[in-house]
Image (cartoon, rainbow, N blue to C red; front, side):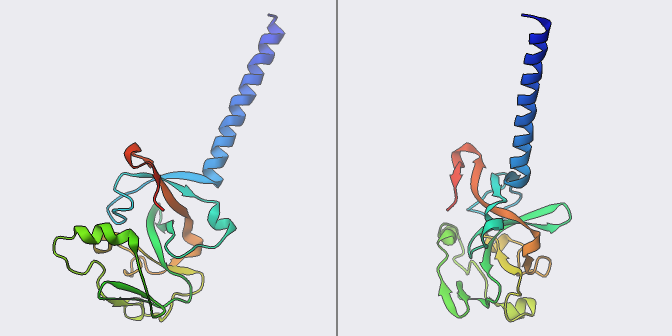
Length: 188
């Protein structure tokens, strides 16, 4: 093999590896990104330490849906993961552990496991009405009302610390556990 052939092979491998790195970084930056769940606010759906994949593409193509799990920028350098309960224009209330959206009762099957595990058998989600919690009759345009699945241990839209979540702060949807392997798979 000549020195020219060796040099050409080196540059071919260099280009291939470089393109692979650029491609991988592009996917991570524009399409999918792993995040680590911190805290217990989304149990049992996600547990503290779970690594989940955030889909950054889907929401850019379509709108967010009720009960989507989103990741959003809550504070500078701090992201939260919560479930969308209220869409723009919705009135949200909880009475006797039942979710009411615009006066209609909604089932929340993703909470069943957690509710059944309660030792005190009290309300899992304490009563509240949107206007009493946040001073608004409905969820404002361009915003969402979000809750953690662990309703007793979640800082979410019920708190003025979070309030309504602006669509502009949403990084993407989460629904796939990557790690630990025994929990690998979709949450839907």
